Image 1 (spheres, helix red, strand yellow):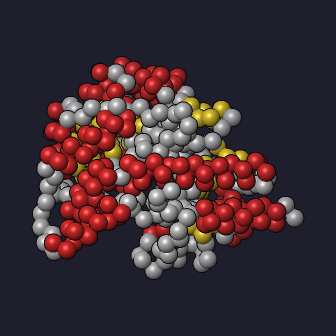
Image 2: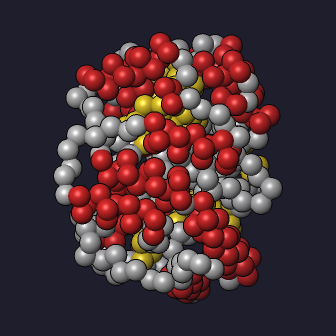
Image 3: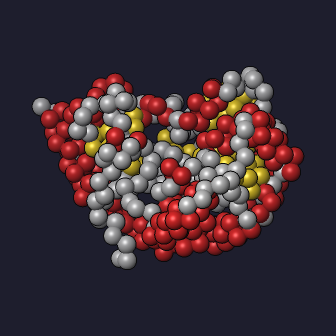
Length: 393
């Protein structure tokens, strides 16, 4: 491989949220962090070079993207996902969750219902509640480790709760589902029928395994283009989260105008200049790096698969179709949520995301991030294996 993903980069004492804030977050010393969704790999060298060049210029004034920036976005989405975009429909922001919160405020009023399908990325629920909207939950069905939407419940919850917005997670975090065209069409049809706008968080779209294919929501049906905003970012794909850059695509002129007005009310105007540089460079030059990374992550996933099958009694792998986040079913251990959290922290010496924080259906699970050198992942799995053996004594 051209890129060395086995190399360990020491991230401690770099103000890393993942590595340096255990004490501030109430965690023990000596934990191996597998929680927050950033990677332990350097960004592509082309991106680093572009950032160095901008830094050497030494002037960091107000900046906005020009046509070549949107060309990079358009070429990436068309070549990777068959999605044809127009530059004028993109709005650049500082992050996907920021865009979601802005859309919630722009398109709903206090007390309106916003529906999510839990277990799901926990900032969804926080974004709804923190903005004074009514959180409506339709729990996903866990069918032997394969998660699916309960469409009858989904529609009933919409009609019974004054729902105005649906926040879709595709690919799904933490369950790893990559929704099929048929599933997306059924969700979209329900939303069209009841006047529900869709916020489609597609930040993990570049990580899909096997024969699965990511389908961009508005490409499913022409009528879906008018009722959705697609939240994208290069940050998960190229490990750029700290540069705070995202690109929200809204084809509906009226909705895009409402979104921009809400941005104005928050005082947001020009984005981070380094985020713009990194995003354009990544989409222009990062395809080869990403393909090699995905092959490496597939090897990491296979390692987890083998451990779960032979060495981690009581822990099952929920087979992911996408993302670099792995959902572990620990319900057979018979532990409460508090006991399971303590088991990971004090028994296995691992910092993971507790399943219950993802909402309904998350209890008894844990989420780990496998985007790290294989040797790091091996240490983590050995720690988990040992802790399980001690648990049974």
